[in-house]
Length: 128
Image 1 (cartoon, rainbow, N blue to C red):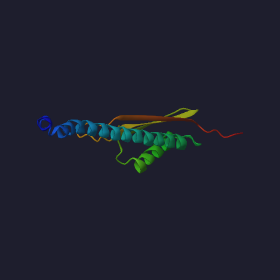
Image 2 (image 1 turned 180 degrees about the vertical axis):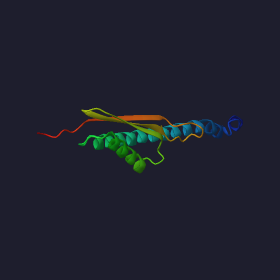
Image 3 (image 1 turned 60 degrees about the vertical axis):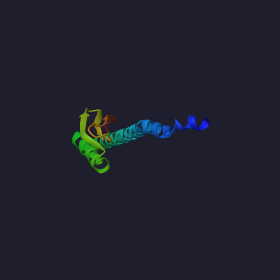
Image 4 (image 1 turned 90 degrees about the horizontal axis):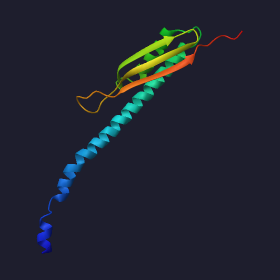
């Protein structure tokens, strides 16, 4: 009786594994994709902060801020942040650098997640 009952469940573990493995693999890939997005955000923020730091030094220059941010991205995010755009807005009292782009994607055929980070800093003024 026991032998007949157990013989009907042969291969059940293999079927369960075949059903759950793709779900687990998708979860792991999504976690890795989220980590890549978070890393791309950190790099974009670093580039924006570097651009704002360079641009606010006297004499303030939006061109120098953009060059510094682009240089930072070239050194650190060669292929991690694609389609990147650096925008700089300056006023007599402050400078704002915004870095936008898309993180790389692990999933073929799908684009990565959008990234936008900004940094603002006051323009340095010489003390009298």
